[in-house]
Length: 235
Image (cartoon, one colour):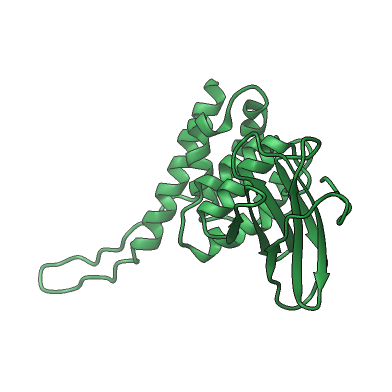
């Protein structure tokens, strides 16, 4: 943990230096009667990308044994991302990174910024159909809270449903309105509409998600049906 604290301090210094460099302009020489020409010294050079890589490697290790949302280094790492490169997202999607770290990172990004919204879509979109039920619900909650997953609800299936539209494609989602509500579905494309045939089932899943390779505008609608009418498909 000592090495993590050192990385955090170094990374925080990189953020501070970067912010100061953006705010300060080189001073023009001040020449006049009795005055000497004065120039501002260049700020020290800090390799923020290298610090970011080391900090992420440490976060991956720590997230394997602790809740990443509670790691102080995550705040510094997120701050570095706002000044850094998108290689971070590719790294967070690798198999050796706990999905809980990617989720905590996405949740911590500033809201209302186009760069943050794009990062969240790119990160969580592909994860929706590839992670555990608990993490899948957490991903849905993050996307909904940030306005990246508009949803509607249906009392008959006790569920909310919608479509996440990200750069990597569209993903249909249905979630039980309460933790104990389990669902089955059979998503179908009808013209330009995406129709989600959703029904409650003791053999279903709390969160359903599936990539939908469909072009054009989509409209999601839940149509709870009996299992005799629509084949149930769990994801």
